[in-house]
Amino acid sequence: MKINNTPKLTLFHCINSFKETASLFDHCQVKTIKMACSSMTKDIHLLKAFEAGADAVLVLVCPNKGCRYAEGSIRAKKRVDYVKTILDDIGMDGRRLNIFNTSAKDMGSIKKIIQNTIAQLEIIGPNPALNHFN
Image (tube, rainbow, N blue to C red; front, side, top):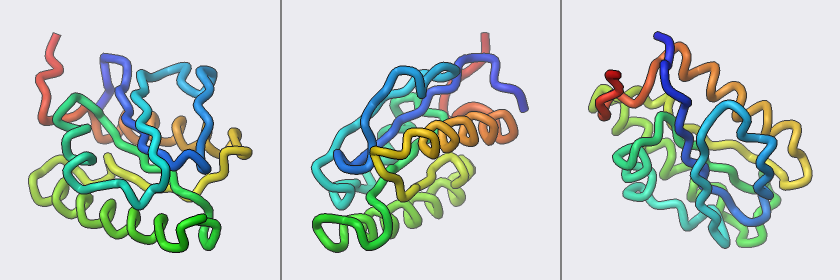
């Protein structure tokens, strides 16, 4: 299913896992939400991002065993996995929500994550909770 509009992404990220750079967002609209630690990622905030119009939501966390707060990335992953099941249960497709271990220094990997997300949206389509008809 082809997306006719520019894909809308919401990107939650730990301040240590991502540094915003406009060149990463060439083919999409991105709303970034900066957190002191990815452990602050809450189920309700992920769901509200979809309610606010996101076609996909990404959560960028510190590399494995690289979290300054010991378990922030682990807590975030558990919450993302839980919300993915909710999205599947309500027919929104859990593939719209993903979590990645990243480093702010590795902009190439982050750009590839965004590109892959946009490609995935070409397959699964826009956010079905919103009216995307022209």
